[in-house]
Length: 394
Ligand code: FAD
Image (tube, rainbow, N blue to C red):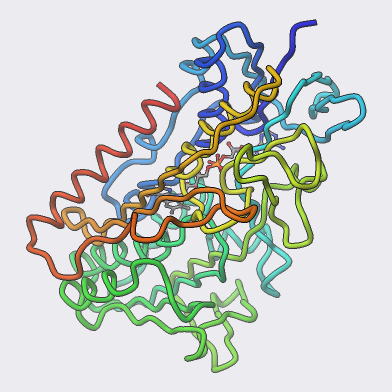
């Protein structure tokens, strides 16, 4: 029988991997399992929240993936039979695999903050999976009166897109400054440090003086409970009543990872850094946000880079060849304003069973730079988004 690789999840990780598998070996049968027919990308969704872009600019079909000869099945995977090497789908069908790639992204932990739940997201949107939640947060901001208080609660590590909450705060501040200048924004943080912190804080002082207040963990930033009926966020140091509350809860790998037996007690999936094969289940690989194993941040850039390395390793393993030692790159752009971009980059390679950052190979934008440098980075961010979504979905 022809060997088939099944990929669960058609996001940046899974769709990239399915395409890379087909590109490496056109005769390989590849099935992509993804319940949604339209993918809504998170990168640049903070621009939608700030009213700078429409949600449609974030949405992509699977027509391009299908054109490569990949079978796309719009079903959710509901289980994995390891002995028979079969994936079960929501409609009861089963697909046999020679190797399986699991790429379901993250799930929000609704058990982590008392008061927060799957219904509380209507009053206090997370907007951490792009789509209806993104549009809802946008609408709540548009409807807020001038002089209102916006509160963002930022989760502990690890989570999807480490600079994301701070880019969001920046772009919301941009909107408030122009449209509702008497308003303020508070970030309640479960951490004492965050990605590109010095760059963000310097930019806030320059562009939005007095508008953004960041409350660190040590200053009482960790949200311990919420009350959606009054939009109150409770911390050990007191209560914050919001007009608009954006609660970004702690996260874990998408539920199918646990069902497939590839998630550990942390909720994330430990992997071999050369092949992305699960450390818990042979024959199953995990890539993207769901995977954990070292220093790589959870980003679309990372997901795409891991997908290519994983595809090459899967092909090598199917041919009984030794997979090559990879080097992976990540770059994360953030917009502080539409014409003000900053970035962080890193290079990673396997070391002692983990993906370790190569010392001195990465870095961030310079702390002080002329406006032209910030404007150029905003242009790079935009072209990065167009390039990656083109590569993954077009
Ligand atoms: P996802 O993109 O979430 O894809 C997972 C897919 O799996 C989904 O389509 C889902 O429907 C599917 N799935 C889940 N369960 C099942 C199942 N049981 N069966 C079948 N399919 C299933 N990254 C950057 O690089 N740059 C940025 O500027 C950036 N900005 C961001 C801004 C925000 C506000 C946010 C929230 C994120 C941002 N990110 C950014 C991070 C980026 O969106 C994620 O890291 C990336 O989407 C991870 O890709 P993934 O494929 O692992 O997960």
